[in-house]
Length: 156
Image 1 (cartoon, helix red, strand yellow):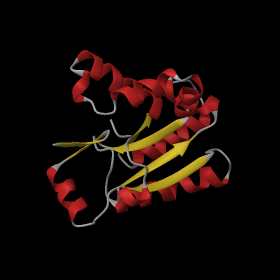
Image 2 (cartoon, helix red, strand yellow):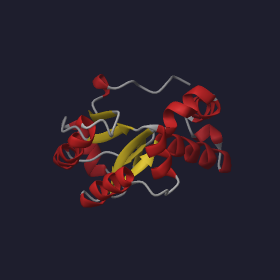
Image 3 (cartoon, helix red, strand yellow):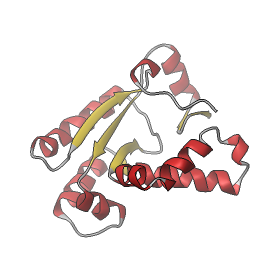
Image 4 (cartoon, helix red, strand yellow):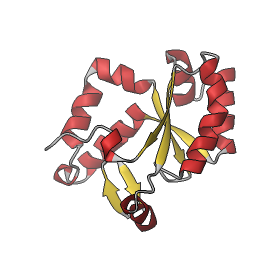
């Protein structure tokens, strides 16, 4: 396994990157009540629909704030110097405004992978689009792993 930013990818995924067969991820931004329902397992019809779609595609919803917090906790339990994004991530979760923003942001992970094939991502996206069009999801994005299309981690 190779670590690139927050993403753990397999050798085959890395070879795909080299060959410019980009990998993808679906991300959503949710209203506060829906985000809290998903994060804290509260009863909510829209949350249940969203989780059913995730299950159909063998994905799980991961809150960005929770992922950041887990990264910081892991770094602090080990050698923080081995975690190149530790300071930036810690500062982000300790900033109240940024923490609020990231508490409503979620990524879909496919099985144990943070990034996955275009086919998986597009199928998932297609099933989510109606929730977005209906205003139940505030933002729906299909992103690729091409560094040209994504902000890069801050320099140490």
